[in-house]
Image 1 (spheres, one colour):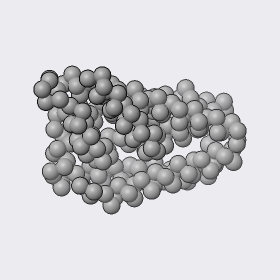
Image 2 (cartoon, rainbow, N blue to C red):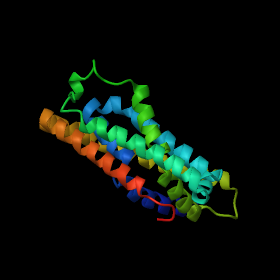
Image 3 (spheres, rainbow, N blue to C red):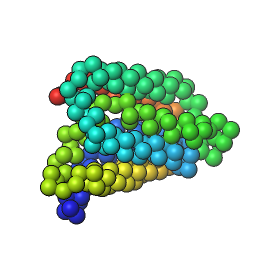
Image 4 (tube, rainbow, N blue to C red):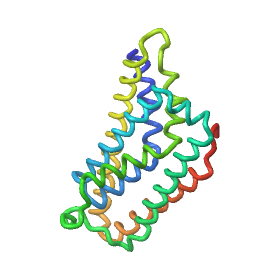
Length: 207
């Protein structure tokens, strides 16, 4: 099992480190809010990992793979939410505040948490990815629940470390480039989220 977890950790790290919606939000939160205020967003993303893996263990991933209707429902909710977040960032007009100036304008921890949680939870690609990825590391000769729990713990820990690194990079970049850099980082993250929304809109099961 230890060897299996090691291989899983390496493959998971490669997948997580590739910028996706939650990683982009961690980067942007670190820049806009500072490292401490971005922690609830990381917690939301980590909880979504656990929920997604639990859903796959219970068969929801297989349901989305088999049902065009439910796949489309989840997909278009995800597209709409990613597009909404992307447009908000693109239209910020440089209204970002630096971390040490943001106390009066910082969104609540609950709002930061829910934003990252919902971004991951409304992306059907996550369900399909875990449905295809996790069974390769599950032994049919042993109880499956402890194995899924172990994989969820490893994946969540790696996800947390990667998001922490991105948030640190965002906070550091803002201190180096000040407001002009903040404006362009905001718009770059917004554009990336819009691109991901477009990609998800054209995504098909089995693609």
